[in-house]
Length: 216
Image (cartoon, rainbow, N blue to C red; front, side, top):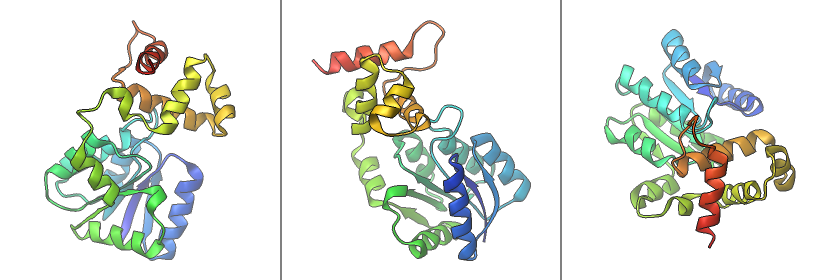
C-alpha cells in the first residue's frame, strides 16, 4: 500500500513513516500543509492519505479541509484522519457522503500498531475506521452549547493566561508546552469563538473579553 502522510510535526511524521514502512506500507510523500497534501496526492497517486486536522499556516482545520477537497477531486479517495482533535463541522462533511473509505482516529487513543495499520487498510479498501469518542462527539454535537463551553480544559488554561496579559512565550513556560503548541491552542480558541481574521478587530482582546464574560 502507498500512502501520503500529512503531519506538521517533523519527529512525529518521521516516526510514523518508519512505523508504516516496517509494516509494509510505503509513505510516498510526507508533507506538512494542506496544499502540499493535495499536490502530493496529484503527483504520486497513492492508495490513501493519512491526515492531521490542524496544519500550517492557521493550525485550525486545514488538513481536514484539504482531505475533503481531495475526495471531491477523486470521489471515494481513502482518507484516514489522525489527530488530537475532533473538528465536528468538517468531520461531518467528510463522513456525510457515505461512500466509505474514511477513518478518524485520535492520536492519544491509538495503542496498537497492528490495529492502526489494520484500520488504514480497512479505509484503503473502502471501509470505515472511527474512534468511538469521535462518533460520540459527532452524534451529540455541541451546537446547543455556548462557544466558551466548547473549549477544552487546556484551551481554557491558555485563554486564562492570555487574560492575564501573558505572551505566547510566557504561556508556554507556564504550561510547560512549546510556543508552537500554544499557537495551535490559540488558533483553536479563535475558531471556536467565531473570531475570524480581521483588520478591524484584535482577536486576542475579543477572546479575552469572551473569557471574562463567560467567567462571571
